[in-house]
Image 1 (tube, rainbow, N blue to C red):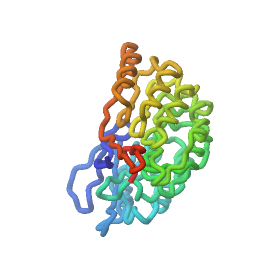
Image 2 (cartoon, rainbow, N blue to C red):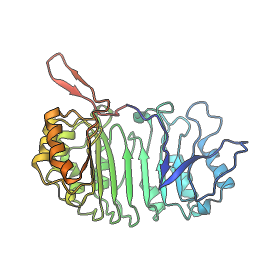
Image 3 (cartoon, rainbow, N blue to C red):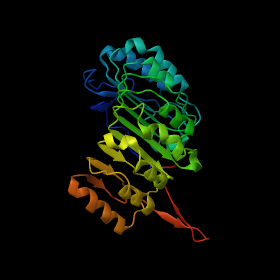
Image 4 (cartoon, rainbow, N blue to C red):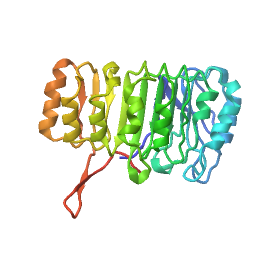
Length: 318
């Protein structure tokens, strides 16, 4: 699986792509949409910073609530530093900004593992009123532990998440955070997180408001499920997402044998390797209590090596 579609919404607002230079399209009200500002990755007719300057000059940005950063030129070899600098330089012109997504690139622009990122912490410290922040691409990505009183949703989408990012998130004080979603990825693409690195998140000590936890797209999904089965944070969750990874019978059994999950509204396990008997046990245990389950196998595939071992794959690595 790859990412084939741009974001359709952010902060509850429909995404709207800033029309190209010279376009005559009528623009929506500034606060009615999530504005997507993008250049071109290859042979750019318009660089991202030019598109952003045109956005600042064309739209009443004092009313803009949500902003999606799309492609920048040579995103497969040039990181997002210049984009971040431009956003921070314009922060006084974006006083109402409450949601920001950095790196809304799809497969035709750059595979997930190709997107070059950098330290994104400055965006959160520079926009202390942000309620939602998302970033796509793990190569070069850095996230330093911080305090942020307003952030309610944090999403990090990667095919291989550096452990220092996980530690940075786990070490942050985020008292308002309700939704945390981390795509941990595959070691072939830089994933090096262990379950012990997730302990500060699973304890929930710095995340008192957390209601949705997504630890997704991981090649150690069974180990994560076993840790989640006894994690203190789970008792306060409404939704739990362990999808897109290599979850099999071992992880499913750990979930069934651990703390009760019947308080959840939704348990997302799609793209999995759980056999039918364990799937049935999950249904019989959780669905009568009102838990909605996603057990769609999706495109989960496996490969048997010459030595007889079976290799499983995360949904998105490259």
